[in-house]
Amino acid sequence: MDHQLIHLSNGIRVLLKPADTVVSHACILINAGTRDELPHQYGMAHFIEHLLFKRTERRNTNQILNRLELVGADLNAYTTKEYTCIHASFLKEHLTRVLDLFEDIIFHSVYPEAEMEKERGVILDEIASYQDSPEDAIADDFEDMLFEKHALGHNILGTNESLNAIKREDIFEFLNENYCTDQIVLAITGNYEWAKIKTLAEGILDKIPANLSKRKRSMPVDYRPSRKKTEKPIVQTHVSLGNVAYSLHDDRKTGLMVLNNLLGGMGMSSRLNLQIREKYGIAYTIESNYTPYTDTGLFSIYYGTDEDKAHKALKLVNRELKKLRDTKLGVLQLYQAKQKFIGQIALGEENRMGVLISMAKNLLDYGKINTLEEVVEKINKVTAEELLAIANEIFDETQISELAFVPEQE
Image (cartoon, rainbow, N blue to C red):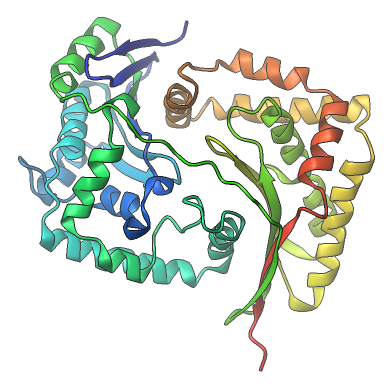
């Protein structure tokens, strides 16, 4: 086993992945994101992520930020639809400093009104910046369109209106409902003995009162494909198209990952890149993505192109999808698709922070950690027949939604 795990008495899980390195990494992953926000809380999860660095019962903003930076460490955080993550990279000897700060900002932040107003302004600027970036905005708007009237269907940043409406008491309401101790994983990788990690984690985190989750997430239902075109003050046309897809717990997830990687995943040799960019020179960026969630998923294709080339680009994309629906992969094609995907996953193991966060997610999602060998075994079991069936379901032209941002007409 390449890791060790303990459940603290309050439900927090602590994970160590030993590594013979000078630089260590740590993260706290919380199973709480924007899908857990109530309508009057839109933007809350991300707002809290910002405010965690502002003031605690023991530290002011400068003390929080300098606590790690003064020893050359890096501290950061991010929010997704389902998770909030705080992570740090640091020299081995500073682990106690890191864990003490993690515990302080997550469990003892005080969210003063003055800091709330400052961060509100920062995020409002972030929203404005995002709206000026159509390639980013269209991805979020497309997801909102697919999951309309569901908790997954609103922007992580929230809106100007929702952000301005958040009150201090709303923050504590969200924290109490979603920052639950049995939904938190502390993960560490570095050159440490397990006995030291266990003693340190128990000393710092075991004193946190248990707050066990009672939350139930609602599953999206009644997906209906739609097509929408929006005029924007832009030069190029930007397009997102796709379909709802498989959840984290669906056995077909692995097959769709292989298929997505073949179609428009990492690298320059994807089918979409070879056809639309390399052969016809239509789009600088074209890619496909598959995002599995707890109870659903999203498959999407994005490209940006000149307005007069948009129709041809869409025609070529649909042609590639039709090929995958109509023609089963040959033995060599299937082998190459698997080898490419396995190689990319193996290279990803070099990103130690990425691996650590992935292991923490495994614990939250599945209650166990999937090893690289287990992942490879699942990929190798995928058959051409399975991929054909997946393509005919997920790439069904009658179920595809499309969102286009087009230049404003004079």
